[in-house]
Length: 442
Ligand code: L3W
Ligand code: SF4
Image (cartoon, rainbow, N blue to C red):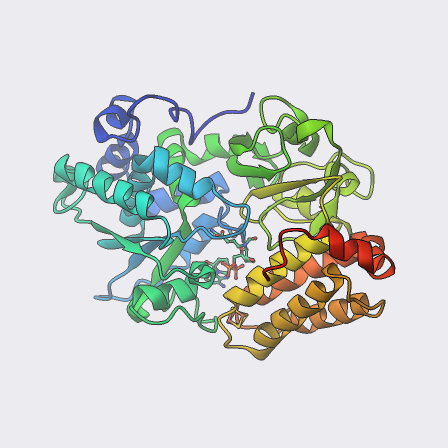
């Protein structure tokens, strides 16, 4: 049984309210941080913890914090990226819904560490219930003296605002998010400069995922070294995984990083195996932006070692035989699922969500979508698979933001691992067409 650092109290009735959360030890990290630690000491604890960004990139959080520029007389901002939109990912929504004060507590400690006096939680626009939940929780925390002027009499001031998002997946890319927060269209900026140097309103800004900020609470309560004892290698601590697709028990699970993929998928503590007695065919381990892998390569690496739920192990084998931890959006596909249709569906999403600034992404996602559509609907050609790989290679690495790569990788990996299934759609075109019931509207 893994440790529960974020979800320990998730089933306590009323834990979404300030009073119950406080009775369970909530906001202790704020007292400890503001009364006994310096901002630099907090950054040091986060560095020691080894925490890596939980939004998808896995960049070391403490290092990101230490990059924050501190010019004299210039405001600094902390912005929480709660624009969770990655297909298959619903762990941040879960945290915000059921234990919103954990995020607010993390925001206060993190803002103090970074020297921010104004911070924002940018929430996906469609998540109206969560926006209301957070606004209520912020009001409760402010009433209790944990937000506003002179917090707990320490002289530290912090205003925390919830900003409804612009309603586009691309607004979750950190620089597009900042554009949107400034009131503009959410188009990604060219990096560098990174937000740590020039972010919101041109000021030094840290953008962190919801789960990363929540993890700061146990790190400060227990110490960075204690946190780093959980996990394996450079994958320290616990990770929330949202499990979906054909698993018996879909839901949000907190795992110790380093748990074996087999245990995660088949044990009753987590996914409970594949539903309806079916066999596993393929897995998307970290949201739709990461390579899809067949069952055997999800459970074991190419060297026949057990695959682990860690940043390194999931990526073992690179794009040839590995995948990525990504945002922790785990989707299992059983033996009845059509990989071609799924790949088309993902690509349709990226084509729709491309902001259109760079041609490889704008044109390439549309092109891949059209070719996948014709394959799925029985009009494909044998040359289509090479064409798709070619287009995906021309997108990869040639765009302003990672959406281009995110669109390219699932297509390239699906063809690498399931080319026979793509070919079947050409050789059995009439069967492929009639099987696609219910999608004729497209
Ligand atoms: C200062 C440097 N800061 C890097 C910072 C940078 C950012 C972080 C990671 O994409 C991935 C993407 C999606 N000085 C720095 C520096 N930073 N070098 O570190 O940066 P980066 O560029 O590696 O990644 P990113 O642009 O943040 C995120 C993938 O996540 N993804 C998407 C998930 C979507 C959700 C969601 O809906 N909630 O999580 C899933 O896999 O494809 O590869 O802060 O500024 N020298
Ligand atoms: Fe926009 Fe796509 Fe370019 Fe990102 S890669 S900036 S989403 S066109």
